[in-house]
View (cartoon, rainbow, N blue to C red):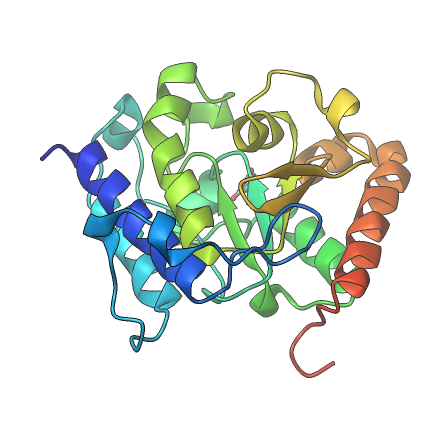
Length: 243
Ligand code: URA
């Protein structure tokens, strides 16, 4: 079987587990419990078996392997898969690793990461309580914008990652992230400021922290987007652990 077919099968298994565990949130926050009879027969799982989102995320990472699916493999130092608890209800998706992230193998650890950490803290969460990843798992040389073939190669892994995490809310940071997660090519200014419901979770597009470092006047808009996220988390009764 091809890598993509393997990945699709793993994704279907993961979705089946989440659906059977009742962990799949329908758009709008209602919990959809599907009729088990409608699940594919070859995906049947033991009802006594616990949901294993941790393993599923590890499976996605294992599937990615020492990836050479696009040209970025030739110039990267590290694959930057993602960082955070596998059961985080809140996920941030950025564009691609930069130089610091490529060196350390962890997303958002450079200047943009410092601002992202502050944004997360201002929302009342800690970085260790949310999951952070990027559309691309490898650094584009010179931090250039991801090319369509690079996004196409990486996208199944972002999709599988989000399916494994089954978050309640996703914050898409900047246009490449928002376009990839939402499957559109609209500018970020046309997408931000409201929720979009895709794949069982709500997505709030907002400005990328690197853009906010260049255009600090837009921080006010980003903060108003994050306040909507905070209000939605409150409405869904989702609080950071320990709060
Ligand atoms: N910018 C991103 O989009 N992601 C990172 O991990 C770092 C900077």
